[in-house]
Length: 288
Image 1 (cartoon, one colour):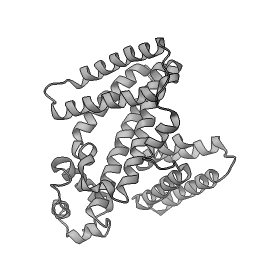
Image 2 (cartoon, rainbow, N blue to C red; image 1 turned 180 degrees about the horizontal axis):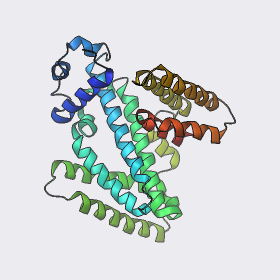
Image 3 (tube, helix red, strand yellow; image 1 turned 90 degrees about the vertical axis):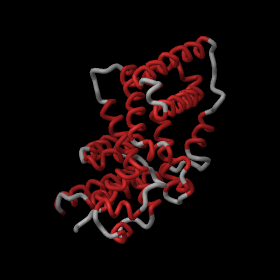
């Protein structure tokens, strides 16, 4: 049987989602696909390595859904924000064993998973910042970082109740409640001329897990991941070579001090059309 890396990830995602990380073994994943356990280790060095890939792909799929929602021109910024909160509840409920309960897993300090989790945290915070700014604009600028922190705390607690006490709370009503309370909070902080207790520099340090934010390294990691994905696309060498040429143009432009932004964004936009590259290109676009 010709099994691909993605086939293994798909099977692992299903079992991790249904049973959780601790209750799923590499042998279970092999049995699910009807292959020898050794076939999995040809692609992944460990169960932790496989889970990191599953976690990463689940997060990427989530942000792809967020991006699609952002492109809905018939919705106001406030309506998009509301729908994004509901989407977060829905998606995290479906993948709770992968996206929520990982905080208590022994994989926390894994050399691959730890930086991955930090990047995901930074990505979520950036998304929360964009949502708040799109709804409340410059009004929240003096206390932006505190507002992000408060919003994340509220969202986290209600997410817990939605997931584990799903018969008690409606996702839609909870999302409306959160947004209504944010309105009151913003008006109060604005009228009182509040300023942030948490400064931008402190939040950036929090986002990076206490490590310096190295944008160059993040971009390099994204480009490396994109090349690996292109190498595994099942569309033939001609198409792969075309994408590799575009990646070379992209890398060359990113290495320049004075970048040609129209060219850069045109190449990213083209690569973004490939579904498996979409999430990486969105991340890259946000960094450039």
